[in-house]
Amino acid sequence: MVKKAVEFLFDICFLSENLCSLCGKRFKPIIQGYVCDECIKNLRRSEVSVKPVKYVKHYRIYGRYREGWGEIIRLFKFKRVIPFADVIAKKIKYDFEEYVDFVKPEVITFVPVHLLRYWVRGMDHNEEILKRVGIKFEDLLVRVRWRKPLVFFDKEKRKEIVKNSFSLKKNPDCGRILVFDDVITTGATARTVSELLYYAGVKEIYWYFVAG
Ligand SMILES: [Zn+2]
Image 1: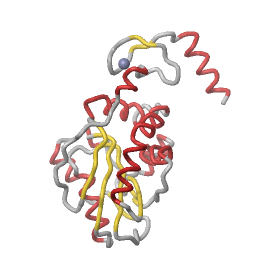
Image 2: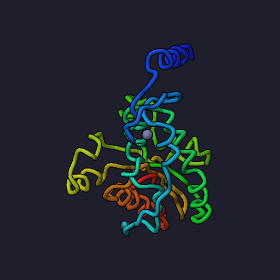
Image 3: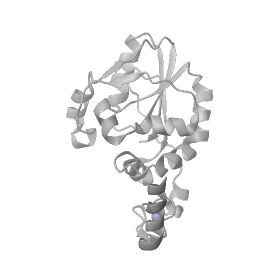
Image 4: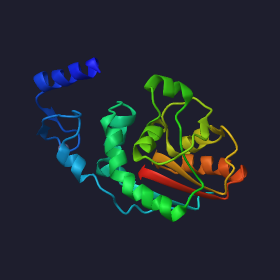
């Protein structure tokens, strides 16, 4: 708490203006010093086209990765700028709840980070977003392999790495599930996790992504 207050005072005194990492304009940081309020206000939902993913019945993507969402997620996930978890949750809340109404899942869960990464970061970014959305969810999946973030690999390598890198903490014990993840790129993670769930008896698998 004291540390937070000192940081805040430091920001007020010494970092009077920052450059927004989305629009490049100068702005006065209040809650965070990376993205200006105008750009946050402009982050929006887009109709992102979806292509079929094996074992996935249907999925929805909230916004476009290149329209600011990629940067917001990157800052939250890799730079641990926690206020962006609130920004993401606030923006997607209504749409996510609407999708939950449409899917009517028996269980909602999320794609977790590896335990080692959890220790390093001190959080699981997807779990943090779901907590802030304020919806009931279960911690069902576990990442069983330690690896570099997928962005460092090409498409084919990603598919190979993702294969077999998840396991289940317990029996899903449901017929319809909704899995939450921050970003969809090739769909390799969604396919692998869905395959795992499918063979564990979940026949209807839905996904929700913040960006794609
Ligand atoms: Zn901006």
